[in-house]
Amino acid sequence: MWEHFVHGADIGIRGRGATRDDAFAEAARALTAVVTELDSVAPRLEVPIRCDAPDDELLLVAWLNAVIYEMATRRMLFGRYEVCTHDHRLVATAWGEPVDISRHHPAVEPKGATMTALRVACEPDATWLAQTVIDV
Image (cartoon, rainbow, N blue to C red; front, side, top):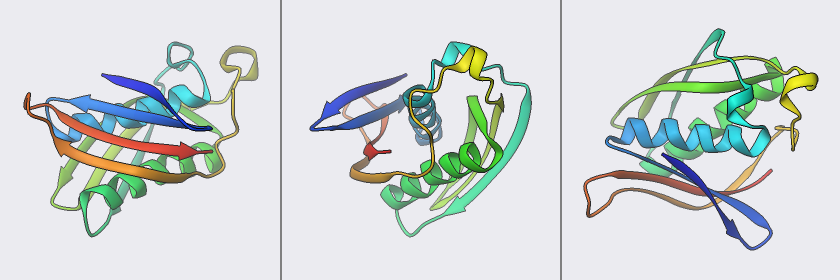
């Protein structure tokens, strides 16, 4: 499950899941939903993504920046993500398609982002949370 929240002039995104991997995948879906409606994206092409960082919060930043990089350089939008984390390494597959202006109607151009208010944690209800505020 993912959601957006207001944080000043910026957009907050939250991903929640049964595992940390699921929460990271949902955070990426929330990021895609900032750019365009998720229902408009067909998961046709597979793109591998790998990153690592010294802690969970920086891994979330590295992961979302890698997704933005793929969006910007390949002109792709992704509707589905499969994520596997181990310690502070992440290996993922993103499924998506090239931007089609007639169907996607991008709200913002994903060229880069500043991320703050980072939080990656197992919540009291045993679900995982991956949260950040982005300024795209």
